[in-house]
Structures are given as C-alpha cells and as structure tokens.
Length: 375
Image 1: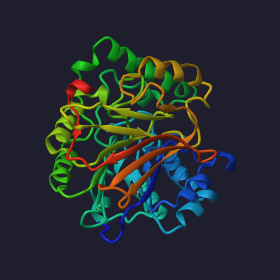
Image 2 (image 1 turned 90 degrees about the vertical axis):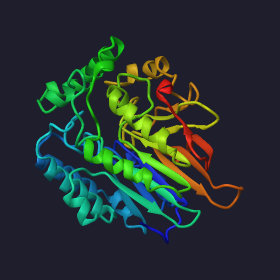
Image 3 (image 1 turned 60 degrees about the vertical axis):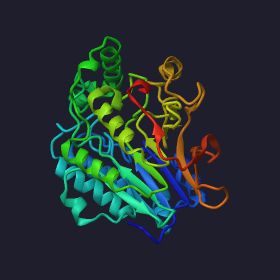
Image 4 (image 1 turned 45 degrees about the vertical axis):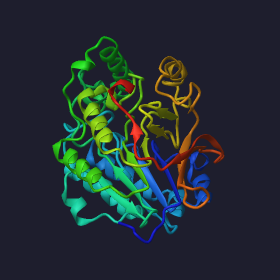
C-alpha cells in the first residue's frame, strides 16, 4: 500500500530485448513523461535459452543497460509481471522446470529495478501482486496477474514450449505455434479445452482482491497475454475458454469501478473493447508490446502481421486502433479538472515519444459491461 502517493502518471511496456543498440532504447522517450510508476507487462528480457544461467545473464545485462540504469535511478516505483521470455521459454507454462529459481531471479530483477518485493511474495509460488495507491477518493488499485506459473498446455501443446530450446528448430517454433493455435480455434478444438491459466491459489487471491476493492476510483488489471482479443494466432485467454469465462464472471459479479485491462506479448499496440452493454460502460483493454522490436521489424512476422489484424478486428475499439511500430504505454490520472476523476491511457511511439493511440475520458463508473457474448 502507498497511501501517501497520489498516482497521477504511470507508464508500462513489454517485449524488451536486452543488449539492443542505444538507438532502439525507449527509455529516453519514457523519461520526459516523469512516471511515478513503471509497470513491466511481460518480457522484460529475452532469455537466449531455457537454462537458468541464460536467464540470469539476461537479467544482469538489462540491469547494466546504461539507459535503463538512468531510468530506474529516478524517484519512482518499478513492478510488473513476467511473460514467457523472461520466464525462460517461448509459450511456456507450468511444465517448465525450476520455477522457484526462475521466480527468485525475476523478483531480484524487480527489486534491483525499484520494487519493494516483500518476503511473502518471495516465499509464495507465483509473481502475482496487488498495489493500492492514494487515499480517500483518490485510490488506484493495480492487480498484477501471473499467467505463466500455473498455466496448462494449450489444447494442442505449443510447439514453442515443447521444442523452443532446440537449436535451429527453435527459431521456427513461434510461427508453427501460431499456426497450431489458429487451427485449434478455427476448427473448434479450443472450445473443448478445460485448461487453466491462474491456478486455484491465484484465483482465490484474485477473488479476495475484488472483494476488498470497494472504494478504489480506478482498478488496473494487468495480464501479460491479451484477454479480449478475437485473433486466434496469438497466445491469449481465448485459448483457455473455461478460465476466460471464470474471469468474466468475476468482473461481472464485482464490477470494479474505472476498470482498465493492460496487456503485452503480441509485438504491436492495440485498443480493445467489449462495446457497451446493459447501460454499463465498455470494458477497455490496452495492449502495449514491442519496446525494442515489433511485428513489422521482424522478417518472420512482418508479412502476416497486418493481414491478421485486418482479418480479426471485431474486438478492436475501431478497425484502425492499432499501431505496428515500437511502442510503450502511459496512464494519466486527472483528479481535478472534471466532476469525476478521469483516466487517459495512451500509446507512444518508442522512437519519438509521440502519442499515436489514446483511450481518454475513462471516468469512474460503477462497473464495466462484459459478458460471454462479447468475447
């Protein structure tokens, strides 16, 4: 809890390859926004392989990055969640070995970056956490979900998780895994999947977080993978329909005020929405992914990235509310200028800092419209 910190500015991002040239660094563009909080929404580093030594070296290299060192030296809080690459293997879930050691490395990285990692968080399995900023009518609750530690296999186990650590073959597995997800979804296999994402301990914790969240003006729910997307080629909650429905029911039952979802993973930025239902405001998800690289900067993905986004657009706020360049996100809380507090979520170009997408006027509401029909 941070009762004395009234949150006004936060930034977030994912998919950051350590060791890239200074010209690809987003930190000089993020710094002028003067965030009080930085949230990693997954893939703070890319481990070269699934060994613990490779993971340790990856975190060490990122901490030694000159621009990152400057950024975290500021008076701010750094926290977040992991995704597959800073977990150790593409598309991996609970079957990856040495989870306890991997978690210790990730939390050590957060602690050295500026997070107050509690002993309880170090001893508990899973990197999930909640944070509460402010007091009285200026409270912001941030809930960080762990979508890797407890996640089951996909209905067709991901080729990335099974063979990603094999030299030569490993480089092809992301494309093959995307194809298998598309096949399973298109031909109806996914609808039969009983697999879970969060695990029972995290589900119980999440229920308690919502039950004890009666007076927050805004609730920010962070998932490293997308929740609302209709695109079947990417990892998302839609490949685990039972878990997705359980999350929907939690949101529908508790209706947290000023709810916004944040996600990463996909190597582009996107504004997603369920649309308005039953007089409630739309549920909004904002994805920022690709700080050092994006789907258009990769030879393997640039050819199909735009066609996939064109083919699967029904989840988007508008057909063109996506950005394929390198990017990061920002949250701006306005507590003064209107009758009710207002949150603005922005996506910025990582090279120039220019605002390229924006979801604004997210006011405090008693709940957001979401049900199974909207997903």
